[in-house]
Image 1 (spheres, rainbow, N blue to C red):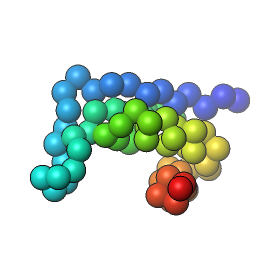
Image 2 (cartoon, helix red, strand yellow):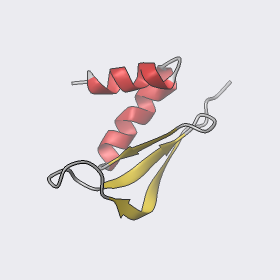
Image 3 (cartoon, one colour):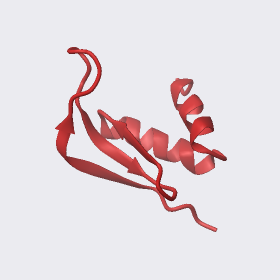
Image 4 (cartoon, rainbow, N blue to C red):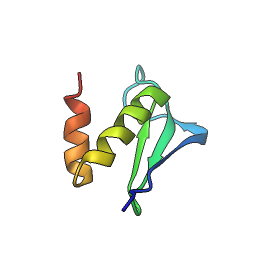
Length: 68
C-alpha cells in the first residue's frame, strides 16, 4: 500500500518563531491529516522522504532533526 504524501507551496508565507527565522513557505501533507511546515523546499523534500519510511510522525520528526 502506497502512502500518499505531497508537498505544496503555501499561498502566503507564515512568519513563525523569532525575528531571524525564515518564513514558512512549504507544507508536507499526509498521510491522512498530518501537516508539517518548512521554510525551504529542500527541507520539505527531506521530511517527505523520512516520513514515507517512518511508522509515525513523531519518528519522522526525530529522524528529520538528526538527519545530518
